[in-house]
Length: 85
Image: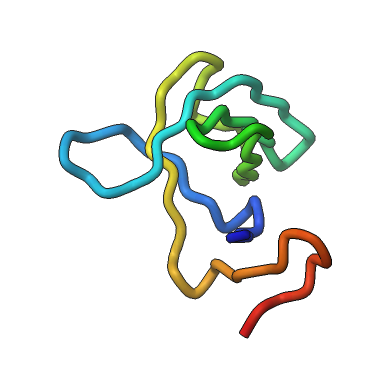
C-alpha cells in the first residue's frame, strides 16, 4: 500500500495529458487553520484525505488533480502497517 501524509498531498486543477491521480471532492471541513478535504478516487474504496493550511480553495463536487512529491510517499504492508524498505 502507498501511504502519503494528508498535509503532503497537493490538490490542483485537472489538465489534459497530465500524469496525476484524479479525484472528486466529497467533503471539505475547516478546523481553525486547517482544512480537511475528503476525495473520492477511482479504484479506492475509502476516501483519500488531504489537509491544507487555511481555507480550502476547492468545493464539494469539484474534480481535482491529486499529487505529491515522491519523497513524501512510503510503501507500507497493508496488513501489518510496517513500512517496507
